[in-house]
Length: 241
Image (cartoon, rainbow, N blue to C red; front, side, top):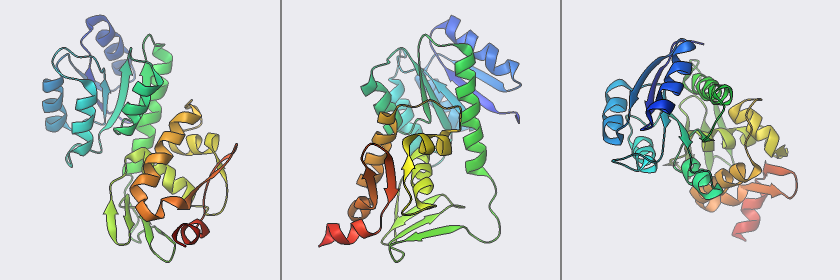
């Protein structure tokens, strides 16, 4: 794996050192801070590939850090892996909705944590890969929905909408084969890699957010009960009648 810069935001010294040890053992560069405010400054200054983020910090809520990084155009492409003792489904859903790439609950296995780190970085490598001279674009519903795979942008009725990286990848997964059903497991594998383990609830949360952001085209993401999702252009006409 290419050398990556990682900022570890953790106020428990033993856990911070454990994460730092395993990160550096794989040849990555690691910087550690226990301060949320300092973390924001470090990320903006260094633009690391990944932030490993605790949520319960002494000076700032980790979710607020996540929100600020994902809404800042300079740092929105920095990957975020939340590592927190807050393991309720609502906590995980909130973190993912704010744009975190993955969520690991404490206590954790170092092997599992590093597998998640590698998955996030592999996804980032695919996401930031240099595009070919000819742009790769998917158009849906007579160009009402345009997905630019090279620029990683989505427009609805010629207006750009803001999707998180995971939301973009899910929409891409469905749009590459419109009309075909993709199971939640297939979507997870396409977006996070074959070794990722995510609950079906996590995929459902992201799909709900995608529908909301697509506005009048939200109905195009059709639920196939008990199976998964498909992109169904006919659903737009039915919804507008």
